[in-house]
Length: 192
Image (cartoon, rainbow, N blue to C red):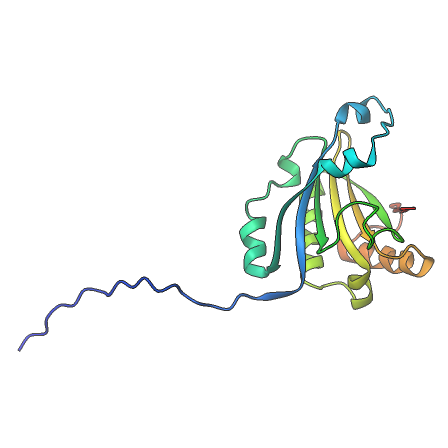
């Protein structure tokens, strides 16, 4: 007796698997600004509503799988044009000073060599969503912004509370994470 050949069964059932939850929900955002004013070294004062309208949400995620589905399609800072900002913020925080989570906080800025912008952006994104930073620092950070400029790029880290303790923690934590030498200045700014 010979066995009859059976073709593989084709099913229409969806594969169910558990996605890997992150500790927080996050959003990617972007903003495009007018590089003419940067090149002309003119400070353009824009209406806050105009600024808010320039900030656009790309997508939200709260699992590793959803993060990768979005991140692999985002343009890298190195291959982007001048005048664009990429932003990663915890939900429901918006990348505007007036957000209730930012209003008492500030930011720290670092000038970046253009050759290292993408690697530093990726390192910071992975550190934020992966909870790599010390717990107190992780809880204090609301988001990060990378800005493409003509001569250099900047990384900004936005945090909830602008005080000396937080500034010291952020200074030492970020220097250690992305290996910033002591002679490189970090620029702190209070939002209000």
